[in-house]
Length: 506
Image (cartoon, rainbow, N blue to C red; front, side, top):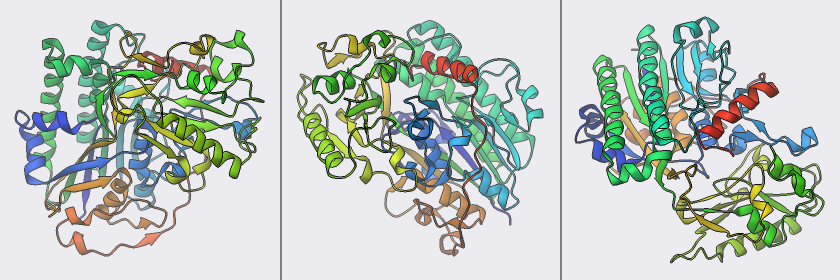
């Protein structure tokens, strides 16, 4: 019997919020009680672009090259200019390549930061990262696009974070549309693999986390309405699934509160590791990277989850930090200073300072952060103003409360959820604990595809019933994908504005 897999990705699915929903969501409860349910560890840091790339490639960012919404081709471009991540920057094969190479049909819906749509044997619908506007090809095949005209899959439309009522209405519309589109495409044809990214929980929790926790009626009603609709769709999927189909629910990361922000570059400047060269650039687009005096700057931060980079000689265009002992001594000094920071609250302001060399392996490992700071388990985010506005006031506070209208109220956590259901699934003897990189190897095993020797993840055999649990795997070496086209400057500007409206960039 030919195996089939359905993947449902709840972007930002937080276990502590999903478990209470089991009482009112009968089909979600079926996954938890009839299948295997447990924890899924995200990437470090737990940011959506690298997490989704790891989930769908089975390898760490050092092998797939996705670390953020941007990549930084400083060495090749000779300038400190960031570029948006797109499908052409995935340096490892995605699941769509693996299924297509072995003659399987697959459909992917609403996947983030995968534009332009990769060619697949089946179909592909791009999600976040698609340039807003009419006439943009966001599907493969292109003929699928007109059938989805009018669907809203992202709430960024000029409705910026800060306008709660408008954002709620837009988020509800996008949440309903993504469920409708996912079901319509699932029903359109019989596929070997179907994968849908359902991003409503993530967008909703970023803005409404506090109201959700407080049980504010309008917010709680919108949350329950969406999950009731999702549960109904899940029920139709489960009822239609034959014994050959395994349904997998996963989240790319968890969620929790944001209490304060940390002005990381203000701190680096105060410690003498970052220097401003042209103050007139501060406050302008890309002001941070263009105002810095790179001949005197040794470290800088460009990620809200504490991604610190060294201005490394041979990697950055005007790098001054020598690789080796000098770089290691500088990282140790930054880490020690960070771990001693005081934000005025009990306990450690920074609870981990993790060197990138311990987190990332592979040909693209050097493209990642050199140090990842975790501030109160991500309850504190770094305030990364791409315009560098905070450096106009170098003596301002390092820590500020998350109380401005544009501030996130909720942010990512390291642990999401994973559930497997179907005739091929058994409840493991020990609590299920998996890594994001385990998803693709497990899907390949379920579909009878060979495993890539480059995989960092493993097959979750403890969740599989016989004969799949003991079925031996074949192995292969898969070539990386050919580089695809990227954004024009105008397209990049439109996507950047959408990310700004959603609160992802400043």
